[in-house]
Amino acid sequence: MAGKKYTPLDRVLGRLDTLDPVNLANLVQRLAKERTLFEQIFKTLQEGVLVISTDGVVEYANDAAHRLIGMSGSGLAGQTLWRLIPGLRPTLLDDSASAGTFVTREFELSYPEPRTVRLYMVPIPGDDVAGERRFAVILGDVTRDKLSTEQRIEDEKTSSILLLAAGVAHELGNPLNSLTIHLQLIERKLKKLGGTAEAKALSESVAVCREEVGRLDGIITHFLEAIRPSPPDLAETNLTDVLAEVLKFQKREFEDRGIAVEAETPASLPTVMADRNQLKQVFFNLTKNAMEAMQPGGRLKIKSRADDDSVYLLFGDSGSGIRHEDLVKLFQPYYTTKPGGHGLGLMIVKRIMRMHGGQVGIESREAMGTIITLQFPRKDRRIRMLVGG
Image (tube, rainbow, N blue to C red; front, side):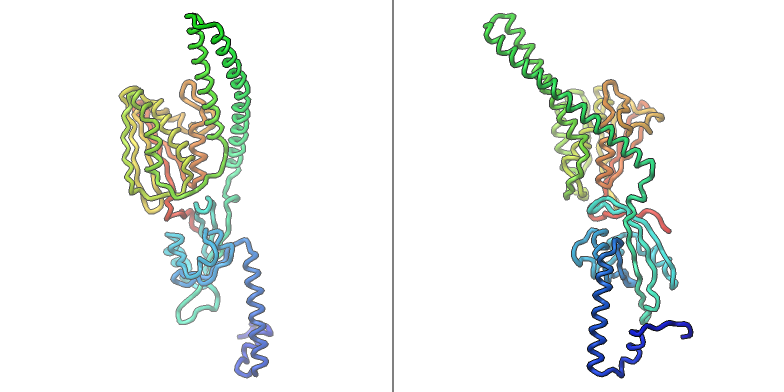
């Protein structure tokens, strides 16, 4: 064809039938060397590179593609891309029906870590053999680009507040230790005074003080554990089992407050990838908030449901509800509507859920109650489509 440029290799391939065995062997070596060179180049790329058929079967995938999709070794070869990324097939194939069409999509992956991936897909020119076409797919991690300036400022503000809170909590430990030592000394002095009624009464007061100091020390310890921004240790987890442990631990407190608990969470609920201890923090914070929002005779209802992509837990209380103007402020640090509240509980819940690739929703009406919804990505549906291009 006029205007088409041919490389020396193209010219050699054009007269392949005329090559003698020696020149043919040299050509094979040359092709093998070029293939090795291109493979090394693809391995060094930070972007994922895939070659797929019309049916979505992966024929080639470089190392970066395996990392981005969360598969090791050569696990992508022979896999169907549409199964790995549900919902991708119809839109991509419809938009790529004509030669040369460029398609882009964005989607979220929650495994092995939450991130946003941008996908580019284009038919490979001149690759139409017997009606079968192949496509080049480029994957790029755009997680950092997707973080808005406001979210970065919010994260930095939250981190600084948590660091300050941790420092204050640590400093409170020193006077508590001093109080413990002096209370022990007072106890020893009282024992030497004998068993007088006055000494016995003072001993009982000292014992109460020691119990309260121990309680404060426990609160500080749990507080530091709760706000320390440690990454989740993800493992296959049954939400029903974790919730049952938390409710069992809080059973006595619910009974003392005269609050009934109804939990409809079947054991067959789909599993999620989660950190068991961090989930307990989330559930403790939500149930504690619900208890404090209700009077004796109140009712906490916990329900669950699942769809193709997510697992949901809903915590509904019959408390006093939250004013509409206060809803948007609930996840801000140190904002609270409760007397004596520290305003960190829901902020910690939001942070843990975000690190799990999940979301938190809240609905409330004054004098009617509040519903908190936790959304977890399913273990077998770890990808969420975002926008089309």
